[in-house]
Amino acid sequence: MKLTPTIYSVSDYLDLLNEKLGDFEMAVQGEITSLSLRNHAYFSLTDSKSKEKSVLGCALWQFRLQRLPFTLEEGMEVQIIGKANIYKPSGRLTFIVEHIIPVGEGALQKAFEALKKKLEDKGYFADERKQELPRFPVKIGLLTSETGDAIRDFKKHLGSFGFNVFHRDIRVEGIYAIDSIVEGIRWFNEHPEIMNEELDVLVLTRGGGSLESLQAFNSEEVAQAIYASKIPVVSAIGHERDITIADLVADARASTPTDAGRLLSENWRSSEQRIIHFSQSFTRMMEKIINSHKEKMDNQLERMISRFFSKMDYFFEKRNYFSQSISSHFQKMIFHFKQNLDLVEKQLLSNDPSLKLKQGYSLVKDENGKIVKSVKKINEKQKILVTVSDGGFKAIVDKKEL
Amino acid sequence: MKKDKKFSMNQAMKKLEEINEWFQDEDIDLDEGLQKLQEAQELTKQVKKRLSEVENKFIDLKKDFQEEVGE
Image (cartoon, rainbow over all chains, first blue to last red; front, side, top):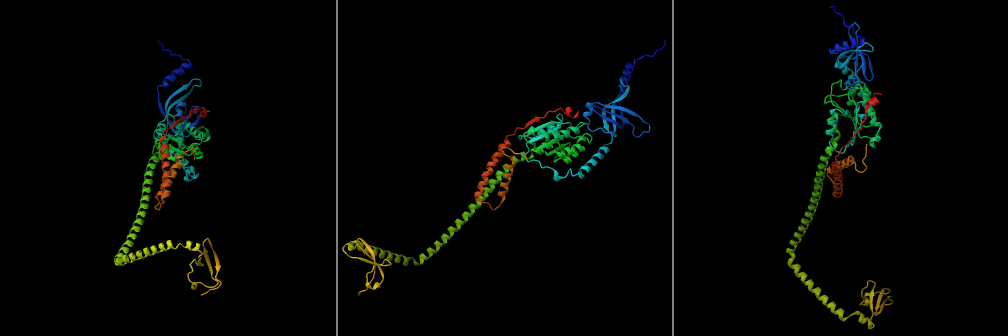
């Protein structure tokens, strides 16, 4: 029997090849050249060190591109994993990339250091230009992916203090991340009307990752957007040790999304403790003041009392000396006084002067109101006051007669 | 800086801190002290009230980023 080869149509043949190619999942390393980024990424992979020119056409579909933890660039050395496929309309072989890993962390690190130096020189990280966060923020603009853990961690540790959190979904990695972050920051700055008033603070956050996955936060575009933001920006990117350019430019830095939540609620949380502490301190101080006043008063009172008693003591001592003479003297005085009083009373009763005046007598007094009983007590030209029964008159002594 | 219509947590805490500072002084007038204490009590009450209004509000500003970024 003669073996006759099966004759395929072009289409069937390519289908067969594609089927066979589909069995070979391979890893290839090379340098990215002629990169074209639209919805999907197309690029050529070449052997950078080889003299022999070899080109492998590659495609990275959009859904993978979006999740890419770094930005594709020409000249980048990468490892790609995937399967080749022939595109039937053009007959061209294309490597369909399933995974792509940049080779050499060193390259990224170098780029990071270079940008850091550049922005530092421009004063982007200077403390003087950083905005102060409000002590009690209420309106918070949250920029993070709606799918990541970051949003959950942030909300969980924010506590409940009546915050208004406006969340805007952004891409935190992949090729759209930079544009998405920049647009998000700008959007919050340009739309204060959504929140009635300007936001108190913007929080830019995502969970940790490799240097590659944090690429967007190490980009100049994001740094500039943070720098330009009128709303203070808190960055919380990655884990404890990941410091990105965004962290350095931001007005405040939290290490993680959890930390950012804590940072914004810190003052709210502590104010409860503080006011308890305050009221205790106030009452204590007030007591102290009142006590010190009381003490002062007591001291004065005591001094007064002791002075009083020392006076009394003096008095009592003297009394002992003179007690007898004093008492007898007093008794005599009182006796005489009483006698005089009686006499005067009797005289007054029997000799009511008004009666005498009515009988025609007059009462003569000198300027001092002293009754003139003797001519010797009077001088010529002296003014006198004469009282009669129904009144009185002033007179001048014309002539003295003895 | 934002301002609340009626009550500002920031101002209330600042005022309380001032009063606290004032009380740390050794030579204090009794009448003034009583006045400050009264003021502090009122502020404390307000702060406590504000802290008890705890509900947070979360607003998702949905936007399909593809529409904007993907041109």
